[in-house]
Length: 224
Image 1 (tube, rainbow, N blue to C red):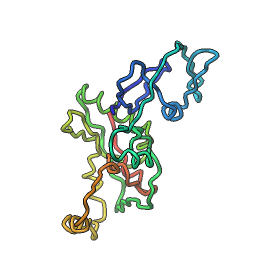
Image 2 (image 1 turned 90 degrees about the vertical axis):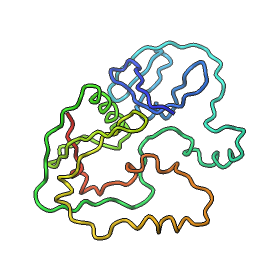
Image 3 (image 1 turned 90 degrees about the horizontal axis):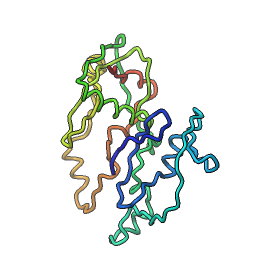
Image 4 (image 1 turned 30 degrees about the vertical axis):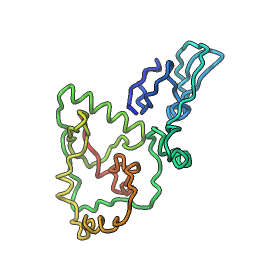
């Protein structure tokens, strides 16, 4: 899977996570069309971006396209994976959390603020792409909050970057948590005797714990 920017001639880029398959013609799935409100107009031979009523022409041709499977039919546990298609679906569309856990940020005093930090042009472009992707997925949203923290960019081992908030000022006015996370050793003890482990559900796990609605404004980050 790879995240790519797709240009369909509709006055905006479309950032999506695609499966790289060994096929002669690329396929855009129904999940992509639904997420970006795109309609295929067979009569006019083109695309419609429904909400903005933008239209662009495209070419139609007859092709013979083999089926594409996200699970290898020869692996021994293919039947298990077929029961849970979300595990092999590359779409990263933000979904509602399946639990009731939310993170609260209890603060004292007035809101803290910060000016945007300048970025190197190459770093700026990489961060912009990441923010556009997070916006498209519904993970982040525009904000007019009285709170603001500066942007910090963390380089990753795969040569990509991860934009995060520098929340040191926010932490300085946040009430101390007297009940921290359990000891890691206790967590490991609970796994004793288990033989099968999966990290499928913890992909970018820091996006999977929602912030309490009343505390979301405190997480605002200023961008250049």
